[in-house]
Image (cartoon, rainbow, N blue to C red):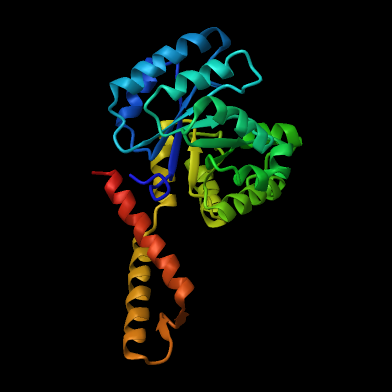
Length: 284
């Protein structure tokens, strides 16, 4: 599946050191998996976890899910060896934590070669250089690291995430300008379905492609929220049909439900249908 046209509604972190979790992930209805060698793995397990992950990837069974590996930072004792190990794995991308500049991506690309890179956006310096980072030729996607960012910014938790809006917006602008995938940060209260849904709706409406998750219990809400609804799909089809009919007949302006339909609306409608089709293909 084309990585730029596939869905990324739900992107679940899985500890690379836990064989049981790696196996369970094969049966989860997520669009993408981040196999985590960084925060989810203790220092004592970091070296051994590379081999555990390599075996799980080689064994396969992850279907159409995008397979992304988050390594440790290159400034840590494990980062370089992580990157070298990931280059040999059959995965879709490598995710670098705490990206502060394009130079960080250059350093990783020297090790991982042609493997697409994703960037964790979780530092103030990274926010200020989001456009520079997004323009890197090897970068395919951005992941918001909102927990680390909140710590760095010394913000307080608010359900509306107002203290985080500037940072989220800077990264969204950078990603959209370069045509990248961008997924929202995690929601920590994994049993709070209402809170999760509200944050998913906010992220969806802002323009995020999906959301990173810390627990399988969050998958259903996230998939549902970031997928086009039946009403949106129906409207998209009617908009395209009305626009095409109007252009064929050469009569005036297309109108659907009392609203004018222009070319930009048709482009959005086509993207909505393409996303719905890609989601259906994931389920096959």
